Length: 455
Image (cartoon, rainbow, N blue to C red):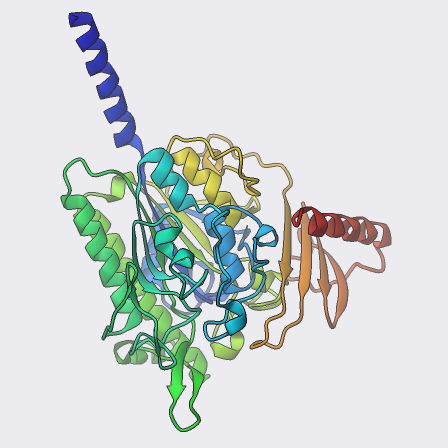
């Protein structure tokens, strides 16, 4: 009997130690923030808190979003699957007021990383901020897709001062629509801080997974009462307009975008400070990533990369990405190997000490060996993107394939492109005519992936 009790106690201690070693995971996901909109990637916009993450962690120099448009980018991040696999073919943005999109989003047969971490590793899961993967029907909302807690909005953008989509309420506390006052970026930051403080106060708290999805610096969705229609507005907080003016941008929209980015960075700083003050920082893997490239029409910049949001040139899909994990990730390190948002699903599983579900056809790979410096070697990667039509941006479908340093791009108006990204990272020289055999090979591979992801 004594031996049995000792064995049980040893087993319990082993389980407790294993649980304690599981890191908290915080992914900060920003909206329409391009390559040239983060200070440590060369922007004039001051982002000292995001830059601090890079100084204390690892910065990727060739990281790709799952898509160049909001909804499929979020689908890829949370499911670890190429958006072309999605049940509803989520290759363009879900439009909040569209009857056509009312029943579309993540469906019951699709699994999020939040669901897996909660079910298989005992994580407490929360989404604070933007969802944009289904609206209206409860089965399409975060609580039905792996999250224990949700505060934020379900549409692609929000009025930053009224928390409505135009004149339609779209601010949730879990499953309930609520009326809220304030400034959206500040509210999202405050809710994240409150969540972290609550976690730190719990005795024997499970690890947490927090998806902190800012809508900033995306434009706001206001309402024109005279025309009775929605209107896209830059909505900086008055407190940051002067700080943005000091940067010296001549363009008014770029200044307003900078002000919204400064508010965002302030919020990131407050969240990081809370991790420190609550003692959570040392056991928290923090990932910062933008959802896709910026939109120059609304102040974003991807220079010196070519292209923008809703295109598959590098400016649409190559994004800032940073990871910090004290004691695990070497401070100030840089990874130049290609990686993508689809990689976070298997990486988070590995960090939590669980296997990624074998029944899911995940399209990413575990980055943990690279993050921790245990394996810096990386084989050439293959990435595939498709974009659906985007009515608001007047864009037709696109597709692209990267294999190692080579990139094939098929556009609706400009035709086909072939680039060697090692020699030509800014995509200035189209090699489609001079590399005809390679062009044909990559086009054929593109066609094959297009078909296989729909099987």
